[in-house]
Length: 416
Image 1 (cartoon, one colour):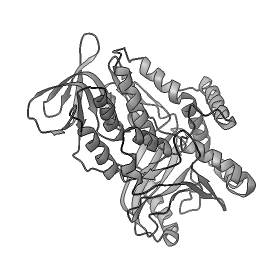
Image 2 (cartoon, rainbow, N blue to C red):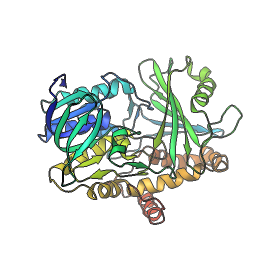
Image 3 (cartoon, rainbow, N blue to C red):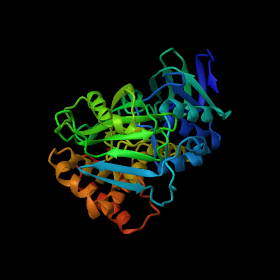
C-alpha cells in the first residue's frame, strides 16, 4: 500500500524507481517471489503520461499473466489493424499466435493506476511518493541505498530503474542515449467520437503536413471504448536526418482531416515526447541494478510501441534477482538474446524511412491491390511485435535471419 511513513530510513529487498507499467509489473512479479519491494514514484495516482494507449496482443498476454487483462478488455477490445494511405486501405486481423488475437486500449491515466493498485495490493509492496535523487554505492560497486530528495534513505539489495523515456535517475547511473540511431518524436491527444467502440486500430501510413509533404512516420486513431479515441502522430528522426516538424501542429492538421469521418471533437490534452528506440542506449545495468522498459529504450522502432516490452523486461529482470549474480554484463546479454535481432532489423528499416523519397515510392505498392493484401499483414505482424520464439514459419525465420545479419554490421551495438 502507499506509504506516508515519515521515517527517514526504510529497508527493502528491491527498490523500483518509477511506478508506471514496467515498474508496477516488476513489483507484482517481485511480490510473487517473496521480495519486499518499495516503489518510488514522483506523482500520486492518477497521473497522465504521453502515450498512444494501444495494447497489442503481446501486451495483453503479459497482462493475463498479471491477472488483470480481463479488467481491461471487458471495456474495449480490438480485432486488429486497418492500415490506410497512398490511395489504399488494408484490414489486418491480429494473427493467430502464442499471444492470442485480442488487443485493447486504455488511457494511461487509468492503465497506470490499475497496474499500480494491483502491485500495492500485495503486502510485500509499498510505495513512497517522492523523487529518487541518487544511489549510494558500497566498496563492491553495488548500490546499497537510494537517497530521496526529501532526505529519506532506502537501504536495498537490488534496484530496478523504470522511470521512462527520459530516465532521469538512469542518467545518474551512466545511462546514455545514442541519438545517431533512429528515434521517435510523437504527439497524442484525446478526441470525443461516436465511434469509440470501433474494434479496429487505425494507422495512416501516408502522413502529410499542411504543405502536402509526406512525413517519415504515421498517424493513429486508437478507439478507447469510453466515448473518446486517442489520436496522435509520430515521426522518425536521427541526428543526421532530423524530422523538422512540429508534431503538435501536425496532430491538429491530421485530426482535422479525419474530423468528418470520425466526428471528432477538437483535440484535447495534447502532449508530446521524444522516444529512444530499439535498444539505442548504453549503461543499462550494474552489479545489482538494471534499467527496464522505456528507460532501456525497449521500444519498437517501427511503431513506437513499448508497453509490451516494458511488461516483459519487468518479469525477466526479477527472475535474475533469484540468483544474486552480477548483472553488469548479464542484463544487456538477456536483452540482446530476447530482442536483439528484431530491434536491429527494425531500426535499420526505420532509419531507411527517414529518407524522404522512400515512403512515396513504396507506399502505393504496399497499400494497393494484391501486393498490399499480401504484404501488409506481414507488416502489421512486425509492427505489432507479434513474432515470438515459438514461430518457425517463413516470415519468422526471415525476420530473425535478417535481424541477425543487420546486427553484425551495426555501428551502434544494442545496449552497448
